[in-house]
Image (tube, rainbow, N blue to C red; front, side, top):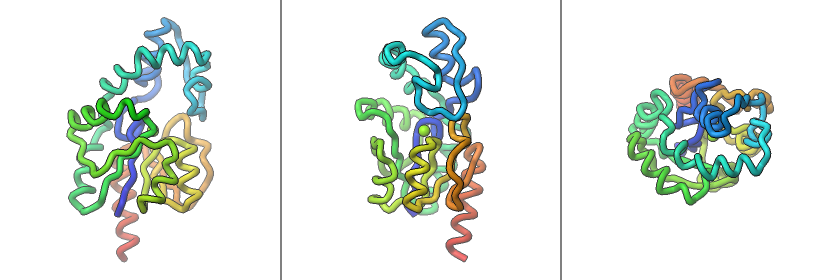
Length: 192
Ligand SMILES: [Mg+2]
């Protein structure tokens, strides 16, 4: 089975609340106590920052954040297991293509095994083209697009994705152990 996996917030471990790597870095950068709004993914709106400030922050810090972010617990082991079972792993990220070398290096450092890496904003269209049968994602709008194309989604629960559309193809996970369990069940269902 072809499995699509998002990188940021799914394979990376951004952590929660005050520990969130983006929030911590924003607060250090602006020396303020910035808070995150619920159910908003768009960065500028979520942190209520003027676009100018935000782009200055990103220009200065995104490289550091992408390089230093940790890996989600068990992500590597479970992706290894999926590969051993014969699944094909498509990493599909909306990160700008200029971060490709950094991203490949990070994946190597954390020993993440995969078959393909794509930089793509329109994930649902690419998923359809690549015959992806299951997508692991945390972004609400990508997930809605995937569900609208009848591609099952395992949604990694976040503050910003609680108000997604209902669907019998939508599965919620808090961590990679949940993801593993859901995939095992899905596969058992298909093969029984
Ligand atoms: Mg993401």
